[in-house]
Amino acid sequence: MSYPVTSQPQCATTSCYQTQLSDWHTGLTDCCNDMPVCLCGTFAPLCLACRISDDFGECCCAPYLPGGLHSIRTGMRERYHIQGSVGHDWAALTFCLPCALCQMARELKIRE
Image (cartoon, rainbow, N blue to C red; front, side, top):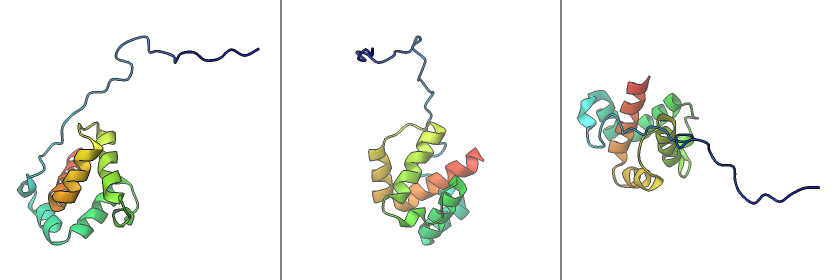
């Protein structure tokens, strides 16, 4: 005989699913911290997006797909436990694309 599930299992300690969230190592507008990345992000953003995608372990075509850059940025935040939200990612990539790409490239460079 089976019994219906009436509650979800609970974690025995309060730190069961807690992870330490950090910030991006560089700010969104710190583009000049790495001049080659800054120039690439300014004059060839799609090339930089492909490099970011490749360095992150995704297909180089991912930035060309609808929502591709957004998913890469969100995935980067999740992988490296960086604070933020999908809304912040969307705003950064929509209104400050070159700066957001440069920030992502610098983050990958620092975390290598």
